[in-house]
Amino acid sequence: MALSIQRLAHQMLENNKDMANTVIIGLQPRGIFLSDRIVAALKEIIPNHPFHYGKLDITFYRDDVRKTLHIANETDIPFSIEGKSVILVDDVLYTGRTIRAALDALLDFGRPSKVSLCVLIDRRFSRELPIQPDYAGKAIDTIFTDKVKVNWKEKDEKDEVVLV
Amino acid sequence: MKLSTKHLLGIKDLNAADIQLILSTAGQFKEVLQRPVKKVPSLRDVTIVNLFYENSTRTRMSFELAERRLSADVLNFTASSSSAAKGETLLDTVNNILSMKVDLVVMRHSASGAPHFLAKHIPAAIVNAGDGINEHPTQALLDAFSMQEKTGRIEGLKVAIIGDIMHSRVALSNMYLLKKMGAEIMVVGPPTLIPKYLEEALGVRVTYNVQEALQWCDVANVLRIQLERQNQPLFSSLREYNLAYGIKQKMLDKLNKEIVIMHPGPINRGVELDSDVADGPHSIILNQVENGVAVRMAALYLLAGRSDEN
Image (cartoon, rainbow over all chains, first blue to last red):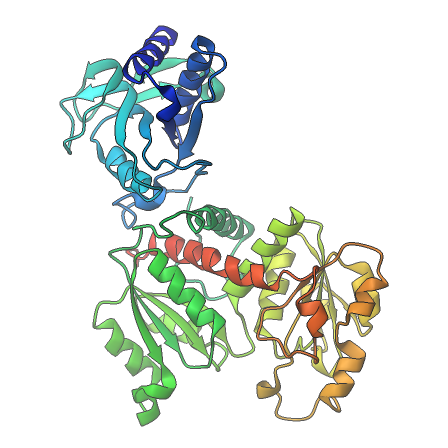
């Protein structure tokens, strides 16, 4: 997993020559473990660069409020995203519905010049919306009864990806 | 996590976890209200009617704004301009409105228990926006949110509730809430405006001396004298009330400590609160109004999340 995160950080640097205009936004609740690691990796590669890093909660933008009630987490975007290139970061890309909600939420903060998507695990062939990642740690093929969970040392004691 | 109740009829029916859930969700909505676009699509398939059988400025506008910020569809009903004036009963009015497919009813009524009566007879979720001299739960929640925001805590906080305790639904809801969240409470007012067995019934301290209460408390919640609910004279004059129980700047100057002054509005300036206090540095009255929208968004959001259950 550490190698994948290193690779994702390097790919971001390749694609965004001028990181000054790039902001990284982790999605609550579980995407921020990945975004924390990616930002740490980027800071190691270019130590003196001031990275813009925010956290976005999409609870209030979900399309299933009446079915299941979700509890909101903190949103913290202490800078303008107007005209910036935004990289959204989440742990697993599955149906694409979370990212759809994240795009709606993000656009309420301003008009970025570009939005791209970075995920650790891309569950291919299970999309319900036309959304694809720009950076993926690993692509896996699963059926819809599977559940893929990424565990993080910070929260779950161990870094691992499990199929349950 | 979800609320333990389907309706928000009073703080009495909530437990500490419910209150904590509403307050923390309100914190997230407060952040939404600082964004360039202060609106989220959460309740866009929810229709809410505001049923106001009694006058209101702050509460009605605050609810309506909260509903619109959540993208709900909003219907407004004011008793004075409706068929209620032609003699239609409360239940008939509400059933007619519900047949237009309304999910949530926000209701203010001058009769205590009116929302509880509705909750028994109709399928929609009810939010009590003040019923007679009973409860005003969202006011107590926004007061708690404001206290927590200003002082960092509720548990262990010393809160004085000053004024017309007898006729105040804000006082009752505040007492229930603060008790459940572990704050200490002292109520202050003329003996004629404090119910007789309050001390035993709710476990609050009672005093008739304002300066003593101000000296003791961290937060003073000053209430309006509810002249419209007093059908007999309970103190001799407004001027005398002000002399004995009004909060004046020089009383605060004597304290030599930090104090927070709150008031649910509308203020009778120069009666329970002098203007220099209401507009002074200790007052968080306008923060209370601002927080009201976030707190009501939280309550509506959490209730709508269970509005499909019966």
